[in-house]
Length: 161
Image 1 (cartoon, rainbow, N blue to C red):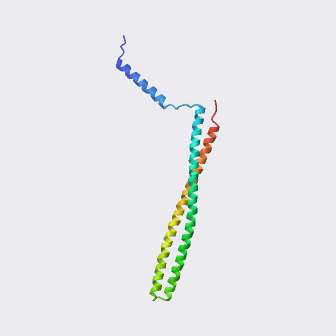
Image 2: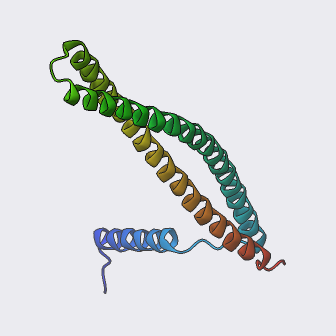
Image 3: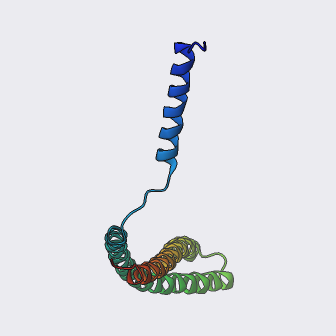
């Protein structure tokens, strides 16, 4: 007569349970079409919220760019005027090399011109960074809009039961 080993039987049952668990946990969960539609609509709302936030950020950045453009124009004008003044004083000094008062004026004017040019360069760099940010926002907005339109078309094609 055949004798069943209880230890062997327990191992077989344990292995069968583990396999059953793995198969059910790894299988794709089947959702009803209505549930899929609701989940897609939820994702659509989240993307719309993200798009609105991006649009707000873009508008703020565009206002910042507008302000920076005005500041850059003023700084460039000031740097140009300072450079012209330094050039004029330097020219006057070359005509009269012994004038120490004129030499001090020319030196101050050249320092001012260098300082103004540095400020103008810094503002131009800030403007370039702000323009890069605007482009990044526009790219992200475009990407989000295309994702939204794809998702919207998927929601329209989910069959109803």
